[in-house]
Length: 190
Image 1 (tube, rainbow, N blue to C red):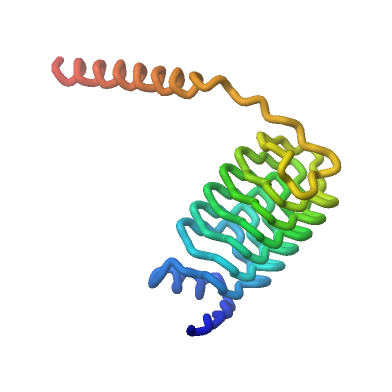
Image 2 (cartoon, rainbow, N blue to C red):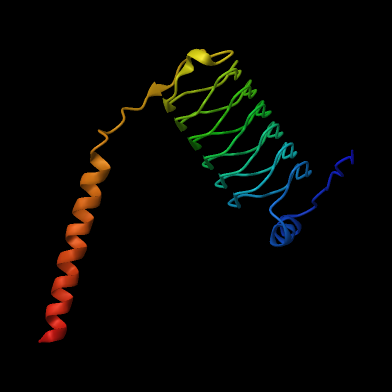
């Protein structure tokens, strides 16, 4: 079996250049880099090391980030969706105002992380450790029962809108578009 060679990235530009060739950052060392606002979507980032990096306002979506090291990483106002963070190290992560939707946090370690003002919806926290996590002003739609250690102060639950509300919104938008198109067609024929 061939051992995986760890690639050390020295800059954001190096990462972006690498992503033009392949969508695989598994095992990569990106620690300490300023990656604020970066969009990392649909990637294999399993076992990558980003400890101490700045990922503020970043978008991390549809990625396998199992066993990733995000310890002491700045994730303020980041958006994380549809990703696997199974067994991730998020110890001491700065996750103020982060939005997490549909993320697997199974067996993740969030000890000492700051989740203040965050919104977490539909995350699987089975076996996750939330020891000493700050949750001031956070809101969640999460089942905390399966967490290894729940936050000392559970975040406020998000009151979910009725399931029919998005369909009503889409119907209204479709109606407005139809009226607009009809008026535009009428003006052309005049």
